[in-house]
Length: 108
Picture (spheres, rainbow, N blue to C red):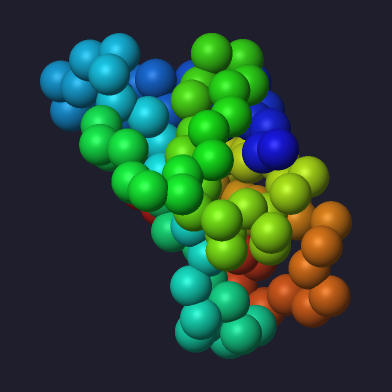
């Protein structure tokens, strides 16, 4: 299961509202090969269910993960930072054995 901090929830809701997305949309989270640590995270809004999707909800935020991404992201917390050291979403993944120097911050 993926969880979300209050700051990330607030930012997600703000982005959905600014984009004019209704409650049928959810946050699709995926892991792809590449990036400086071997994997990169993707975030996108979607409203179409794909075969094999795993759905989770935390604090009213609905997530969809494909099965491969679910295996990598189980137990991950999604946070949002708007501080001086960078602005964007951060994944706190207890399964990660190494991370890159960029701090794993990703913007939607």
